[in-house]
Length: 104
Length: 188
Image 1: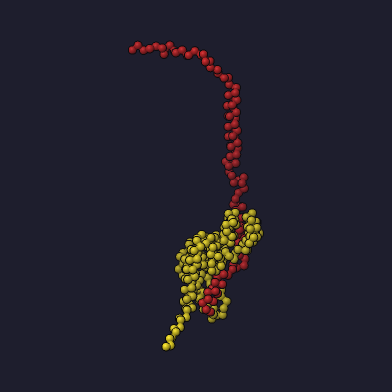
Image 2: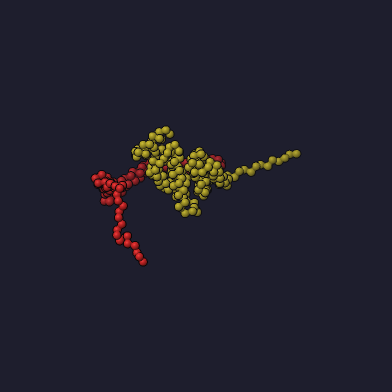
């Protein structure tokens, strides 16, 4: 065996393939991982707690409250009587007490 | 490799038979790479399994326009093996498990010794030289692909492969010394 043969033989030995059954091993590990994940992961309804499930209702209630307040304010504006101020209104007389000038 | 796209697209939807097809098609490439980096068959089997599981978990991130599937897999394998090697204690005594030879007993003794020396030299190469050498010389991957896998420039890959080869050739030099040139005697 000369140098090049030794080199080529060594490279060829290092190119060997996996043992048979490697694919089965990988696939069973992959399927096991999928099963474990499905078991470990609870159903969406139970995963969210009580508070999680209440969130949509709370949001709906808040939105409804905002709407009610808005509607009430608009309606109250429409219904309330408009106070017309007369341009010729007399200036308000000062109270007598304010007219008293201190003599000291 | 056009049907690779179809298989990968099916595997991305979670089809088990498509995943198996990918494993059967690429297990050799991944295993050989891991085997040559980790030097233990058992470690290589574990690493190969982990590489495929990681690939399946991240299959939605694979972009066929950026790299071939084998390149993507080998990138995962390279990162995984490098992590394993770095986590191990620094290599002191050689601990690679021997590969089978196929020669006569007398020849086998010599061959096995040479191969073990080469195995040892490969194991003691710096990690980046080892990965480049394994991909280029053992797995016949083009240098451009190795540059993608390693995330370095093409010139860097070439220099790493060349330095690794030079180191391994030194081992062979010890076993098969060059015949000294015969001095030419002048006749005058």
